[in-house]
Image (cartoon, rainbow, N blue to C red; front, side, top):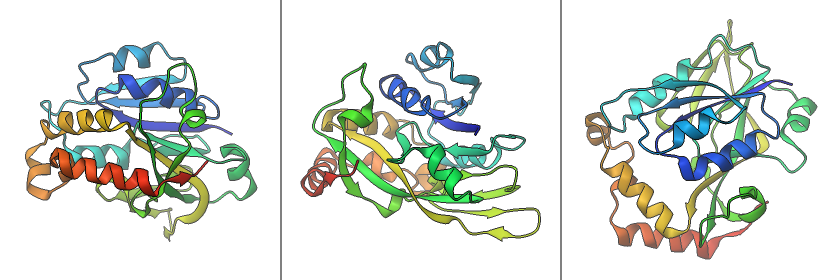
Length: 241
């Protein structure tokens, strides 16, 4: 089974190797849209055999969610893979029995994942998979995203900002995503300092569109608000994988 992963990156040098390690276990290729990274993101991507294409996306050094959703509604068109997955670089699709095995057992046009906010008190060690190190989190309906689909059946998508929801169309009708046992593991809370630094970085890049619509407003939260949320997730977390 051929599976293509699509992601948009900005300064993901710390997370990208974990991302590529995870998807190399079952994906055929990764396609990256890089949004003006200033660190080693592009270098890491170019050196990895799974990454087949890297496209440069210019937004004037700003975080523009309207651009992100345009990419996700179009990047997969013309792809003849069995399935595509449209994920952020901190989002890992997971199933205890294997992704390919699960999909082959009940092939559906579109899957909605069960979303989890994963958490740890420190950043994971290099050289080991992130799923072997960080196994705890909390269920989060916000991350139950419908981001896995068969591009040979789906001909049009209409994603909402952040791809938290969307509509899917075949040549003849709208198709409803199938609720699945596939887990979306959201690895943002990798120690509070890592989370805080990422939020500070994105808060400085908020585009006019994001400021006007409130998209990505959580990046602008003050330290106390962020820490309160981090501590709440940590306190409620339990073993997920």
